[in-house]
Amino acid sequence: MNPRPIRAVRLTVLLLICCSVVAAQEATSKSVTVAIEVTDGHGSRIPKAQAEILSVATAGSKTLVTDDEGMAHLELEPGSYVVIVNCVAFKTVNRHITVGSAESQRFEFALQVGGCPISDPCPVISEQVPARTSGPASYTNSSTGLRQLLDNILLAARSEDQSELLSMIRETEIPNYQNWFTANFGQEKGESWAEPYGRWLAKNEKEFQVLLVKLTHMDGEFATEKLDSAKRYDLFDGPLDEYRASWKTLAAPKGEELVSIGDFFFVEGKFRWDSNTHYFPFQKPKTGSIVPAKLVKKVQPEYPAEAFEKRIEGIVKLQVIVRTDGSVTVQNVVEGDPALSPAAIEAVRQWHYEPWQLNGKPIDMQTTIDVIFSLTK
Image 1 (cartoon, rainbow, N blue to C red):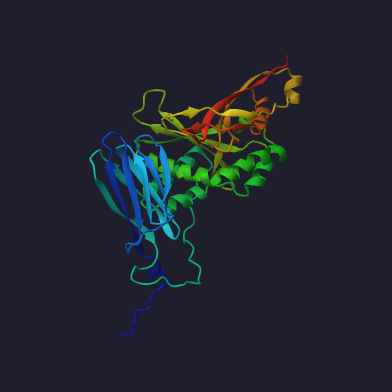
Image 2 (tube, rainbow, N blue to C red):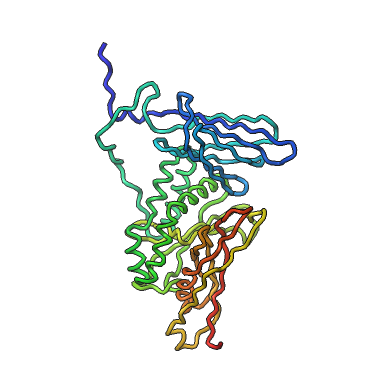
């Protein structure tokens, strides 16, 4: 009998990764020791697989990587978690698990990944993978359009296969971001904003992915609004179409229904996520031994000429993130005169800290900084 030919479309069948989670509770501790084992369909362990453990209750997350034997361990309190596993050559997937308080718990589940049939070796394919026949959906330049986009992204976040979610997040990247920032905010300011955008983009996208998975387990919906970019920024090339997305929790107390999720610009026909304005919603305050950041470099703002001539003074309050490397990412202006805000942002972006530490390890920390503009010494 002649063997049946394998068509290109047949090469998208699924492999199985078996991930075993074994939990044993220490008698004197509330936490549970969890062992994660990642294997392929043949039972062989996979080293260097990355797992993101997201707490459904607190939105706190931990990242770990399997060792050379395909094993990783961590301490978790009993509760519900979403486990997102990434591994080279496999699709990103997520599973929901519940860690109880009993000893010797064991969770076994199969993670679907793209590949070739387990029984056959993977052939070398020289042809390109066919492009999608239907392009990405288009959304109108409006708050309604942004809400429709986010609703579709949330649908992708509900899927066990996270590849579509990652693709949709990456489609919100600002194209040619270095040129875009300088064209809209001027050479000096644009370059100072483009640098952290590019440097932290991959990390911010990963955190955004974790946040979206968290939202799939919450009772609520997106709310969007258009922002007045002319008042928020000293724009070099006219006003921008900017929007803010929030999560509306249906059962929240009055006045606490909306929680900011992210800001978006409409650029080249698509909504682009401004990952420089990065929020930390639904996270409880960190606990443990915290050492505050120490300012080691402070740059005084240059008084804007127009503000000086008009005798404008006051305080500009900025919401910022002090990063683990000591750099400062300015998220947004909390309050302050628009004539003074750009100068405050430009100065604070050049500040440098010894970072915050939690239990001896540097951490990103969101905080506020007041910049004072005074015409009198």
